[in-house]
Amino acid sequence: MSSRMAGAALLRHLGPRLFADEPAVLSGLTAARGVMPVATRILPVRMASTAAEAAREDAGAKHHGGAEKPEEPAGGQSKKAIVSYWGIDTPKLVKADGTEWKWPCFRPWDTYTSDTSIDVKKHHEPTTVPDKAAYMLVKSLRVPMDLFFQRRHASHALLLETVAAVPGMVGGMLLHLRSLRRFEQSGGWIRALLEEAENERMHLMTFLEVTQPRWWERALVLAAQGVFFNAYFVGYLVSPKFAHRVVGYLEEEAVHSYTEYLKDLEAGVIENTPAPAIAIDYWRLPADAKLKDVVTVVRADEAHHRDVNHFASDIHYQGMKLKDTPAPLSYH
View 1 (cartoon, rainbow, N blue to C red):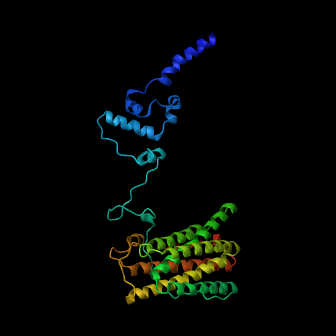
View 2 (cartoon, rainbow, N blue to C red; view 1 turned 90 degrees about the horizontal axis):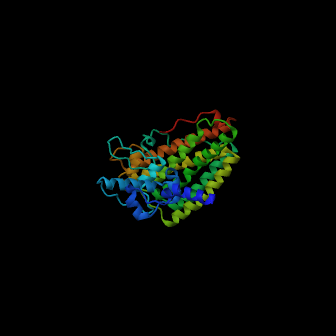
């Protein structure tokens, strides 16, 4: 009997909370969803979802004569609700002229004015056996590329940049892991190499506005990147100085390729079209910039990468480590 009486007393206290109708404020929500789950009655703050909170605010707005709630995307949660739940809000960025910044892949502080006063013919003369091997390897790769692309410079640039963006990412990643496991500084080389990879990727994004790769060019990129990434990864583990030397010679060839591109633009063989908008903002070019201006600043970037990688290789040849020599200043 005592157990039955205790149960009856407990039901009298918890019954209204567990089984009563929703408050008046949520009457519209109750009609749509029925009685709130038992768990949310017991722990209303912890268990309430963002969608429920949004519906509650909407019911309150209608009660006070507010505007109707805008249509939500599929899934029942608005973008605003998701952002407010995590406390994250993307800032609205503007350019110097007050217009909205429209590039999510890079921000205004990532842009820069390129230094185009470069030595186009600068070349590291190979003297040691590894240097000669690196030079011959790069030269042997250039022959099929010239036969394949000939004077289709934009398509050549697309393939070139998908490969050129690999070494900086691989080198930066391996230096990052070394810094973690050895508890040591990197001398700024992690950032320098990752910036190189990002810069090469922006070259690719720019030339995608000039031309689109065909299906067989995409297939070639898949094959080339798959082979080159793994080969460079192993090569950097075995000999960073050889890996950086290979990249230095690759960048020398890139400077040569963009020089040929410029010659055809100046000769009228290729139409000097207006520069893509993404290039104007990334390199802070004038609004009336042309494709020739874009190729000029891209070539300057490649020259900077050439010098940085040859410098990194020289550090290793002198018996030093990258962490003991500060990385060169960024081209930004």
